[in-house]
Length: 95
Length: 482
Image 1 (cartoon, rainbow over the protein chains, first blue to last red):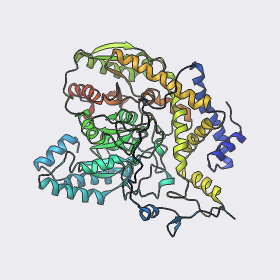
Image 2 (image 1 turned 30 degrees about the vertical axis):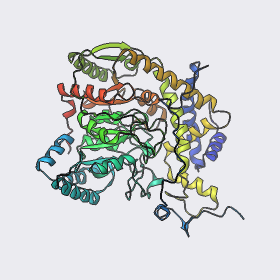
Image 3 (image 1 turned 180 degrees about the vertical axis):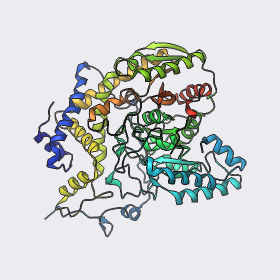
Image 4 (image 1 turned 135 degrees about the horizontal axis):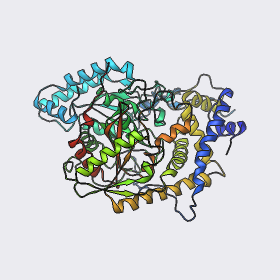
């Protein structure tokens, strides 16, 4: 799989990553060579092999739906880039 | 200044020195050499001395716990309440963690002193510690060479004896490879053995915390504090923690060591192979039986790993959005611009490459061909180990194909860097525990021997490593710092 400039732009958009135009070509080359490496997987037939999601095939534990955390809003918001009245601020999204 | 954890514990108990004295000694040494080695991102000198003072009071009161007053360094991937936790990324350069990782909490409860936070590859993505926002780390054996990665700062700090021991994490070899290249001992426990809570996630199905130290004996002491079930980590395994030091002296006579032929083939440096061969001979003399085994799917582990790890990282790193914490770009024009520029400015090249590979592999129409295929192959890799452990007790092999390379040698070609991980990543895909121990030198640089055991057999690994360290002194070799 060889990625074109346009493919890299699309992937970067999906990943919400700003990539400088000057760097796109290098990314296309590097990502293509990584995908070529990934394609070595096709050498092995995996029909009927169950995908492995957890090394010990463990499943997610459940716990009672109880409040276990205390409210630490002030502490958490102290490290936020922009807060006002206890709310996180971002550029306007609704006109 | 080459005291082991055991010697520090003894010295504190006997009153040979106080925790404040020994902590100050390490801080002074860090002050002298960190500019050159660059193994610490943050030196927590004030906090360390406060903790040491408190430890001395506890020792004086006769209430010492196992690690009371023992100085340690922590990889900057573990969240530390009130202390900068950067993961070596610009995006977290201003991040003061608001809570402690479980591992940190456990060391605090055990009374340990934190010297600082160690350098690493950004978000643990790398094998050379060259992908750090804070600059590369020098290998204490030769400053022109890399220390390995991603726990390169922890490995270099311990090798240079700027810290008696350190924590690390291992997603594809990030404890074992730097331990090998820096000539120290490192253990990567079974997946689920050490809590991942507060350990900044890279690839959640592979990440595991562990220890880097001067010997297997010290690794056992650290792991004893780190290991255990944690309800706050959904993949933590609820199984009892054995006494890791209890069986360390057991005889290994008659136990079987498997040598996988795939680990000794093409690509392995001939002189590294010689060192590993000598180490295997030492085990034979200790009475172990050496048998040949096969792990036929080893070669698939690199493509499988880079699909699984990148896919999981693209998902995990979506949390860094410039909204709630971390770097935010200046004057965003809208929300999308805020996301894209904050992330574009905050992440380094390797992190961006992996996020994009993962995004692509998980995108509509490609999931089956990449992620699902990789998860299927992962099972085949695991089955190889299952077959092997039906025959042998421990697997022995090299950690890396060659000794530490020079800065810049592989940084232009991501794939050639990835191939460095050939001997370490299959174990993460299977979730098994592994160790690296110093086994000799090639071209004046340390060579590591890798030991792999079955699930939850960390005690066996530590036993095998300790027995080797009773008849060799490679682990006692220290680089001369100038």
